[in-house]
Image 1 (spheres, rainbow, N blue to C red):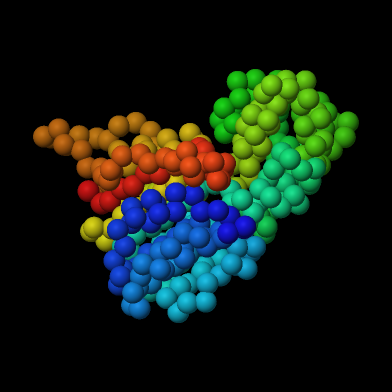
Image 2 (spheres, helix red, strand yellow):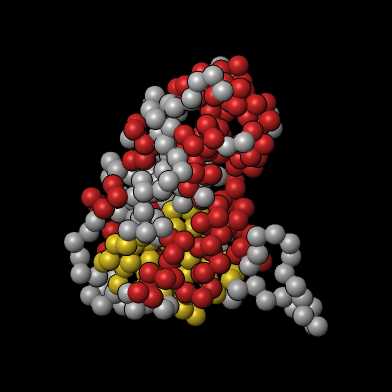
Amino acid sequence: MSYHSPVLLHESIDALDIKEDGVYVDVTFGGGGHSREILSRLGVSGKLFAFDQDPDAFENSIDDERFTLIQENFRYITRYLKFHGVKKVDGILADLGVSSHQFDEAERGFSTRFDADLDMRMNQKATISAKEVVNEYPEEKLADVLFLYGELRNSRSLAKTIVEERAHQKIETSFQLKQVLKRFLPAAKEHKILAQIFQAIRIEVNEELEVLKEFLKQLPGLLKEDGRISVISYHSLEDRLVKRFIRTGLFSGEPEKDFFGNTNEPLKKVGKLIVPTPQEINVNNRARSAKLRIATLK
């Protein structure tokens, strides 16, 4: 799987407790590794639907009458499943974040390793790219993006420096941005800080946290009574949302109690948090920050 090495492959599919005649959804198809594993466990009457908004992923499509690949963002999961005549499913898998392919394709602009146009769009039809965020966002909004999504404490100074530089010359490539912020990148921490900056811009470009919230809110209405969700996240911002929604059904605050002091959370967690083994991390370094959470209807 040169396109994308599936992380926590067996653990995430085991978590779905596959039924041979079940209906399943892989909302982040990518290289198709997780989808192929689901199909290998389905019988002839089973069905698998997959979502991916990146046209590159369609080159990995699977020729199997049980399989349907939908070229859309998974924030629209309910709408497109309904279009295909599906109201309830037995399991949903989400492998969040950026695929290895997107990181490794220099022209996509996701990686700090290459000098490429500031793009970072998972959906190439989207109108806002990293270039617009860096060159057109007001200073305060840019600082908020860097603080909220990159968790950078010096976000105000970073944003001020970017705005001052772009007044003289448009910042169009990843290496240009790196050069502009050079004084904030000490050698010992350069890679980590750059990764945080790129992560923040990428999340803003793709509305990743809003997409995740919209997706999670739809899950209780899509799952059959004993249906399962299996969600792999790669950074604390995603994981916090997933963990909190499974625990409370909310993204902030606490659930309201009824007259008897009971709450009505839609989901309940299954098992404990699962992380990759040292062996998997050794083979696939991108697995190092992965966290798998599993839930079912309460």
